[in-house]
Length: 142
Image (cartoon, rainbow, N blue to C red; front, top):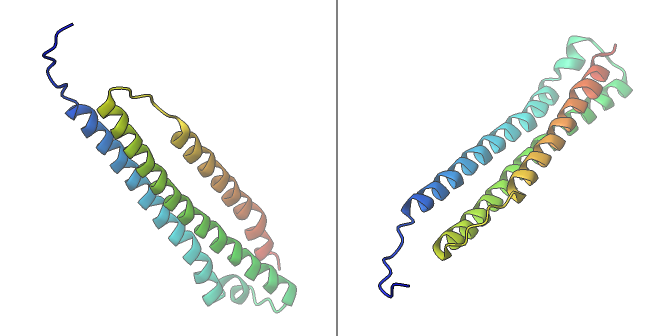
């Protein structure tokens, strides 16, 4: 074994780690923007009362279902924003762990962030589908 080891250039690995971190950040920012839009859309419908006023419905039960539907929209939007924040924290954790492992020369890929993000997005997607097919048609019944 040679005593004069040259330092290993790991700049490519560090740059790849930074690009991965930045793409997770972009995804998280897009999710938070989508969550904001979903939450505000429910508020928009509630403020202008589009579904109740356009159908001339005076039934209190239908109005209650309408408000509940808008509440669910806000809840889904807030959940998407929280998911975006959690993804930023996971991305930071992954970036720091990868940086440490690359420096030590013992990088072991982790799938936790990918599984956590995928499962969370599937759950949010299913909740959105349920909202669209169950709550919104209930609001349109005269």
